[in-house]
Image 1 (cartoon, rainbow, N blue to C red):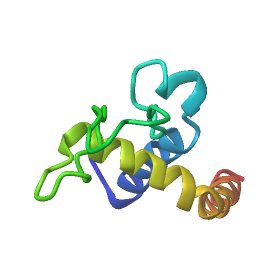
Image 2: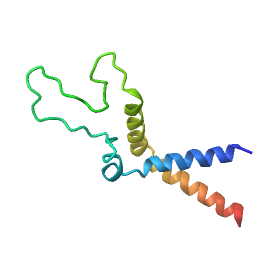
Image 3: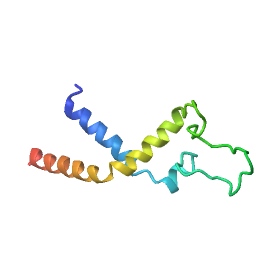
Image 4: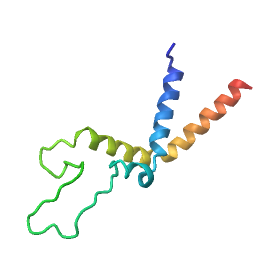
Length: 99
């Protein structure tokens, strides 16, 4: 049965998976990089195509892909240090529980 502990483990594993994704090796190859290639000089008043970020357009919705890219970037940036502590707590808990 799905308990609170199982739900905690699954969420921790998913957050760990997002945190270890390499932007250069994996995300950029499938077009999910947060860095955008922009031309040096787009010209006077000319716009250039942005692959996912629609925030530059007023009232535009970034879409699902843009939101997922932003979520992955935020998890990789903000959750790196707290994940180390959470993983240590889970590992110590498992050692105590099994031993």
